[in-house]
Image 1 (cartoon, rainbow, N blue to C red):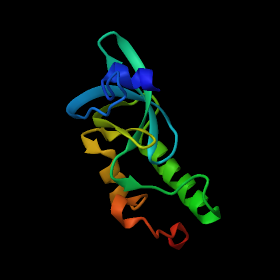
Image 2 (spheres, rainbow, N blue to C red; image 1 turned 180 degrees about the horizontal axis):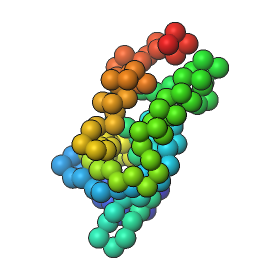
Image 3 (cartoon, helix red, strand yellow; image 1 turned 120 degrees about the vertical axis):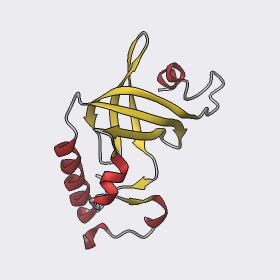
Image 4 (cartoon, rainbow, N blue to C red; image 1 turned 180 degrees about the vertical axis):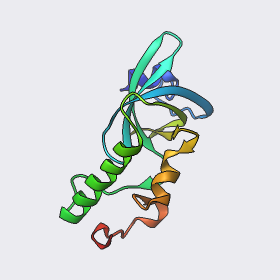
Length: 137
């Protein structure tokens, strides 16, 4: 994974995080991992590189949570798959190295994916999720 991040410039050769706050890349959706994480093929001058991008600023139900949380995660993933098609062209921007990989924004059809998910109550903002009970929804 570090090799892919090096190619994109998300981390330096010394494994130090480097923000790409003002950069954007054209990409294609390879597949939806879960409602927060996507495998994308990023277009680079010499070809494409597949990376996993986690949406920034949201908390989503986990596929490996309790039964209610798993059900909410599967419903949210189905929602995303209904609006994002495999091989759909998207824009990835604001990439940075996060705790569990690459974090950033994904835009499709001029819309920020995280904002769409928030609007349709599939996810919650990052600060509000500490005691989230997915079974209530």
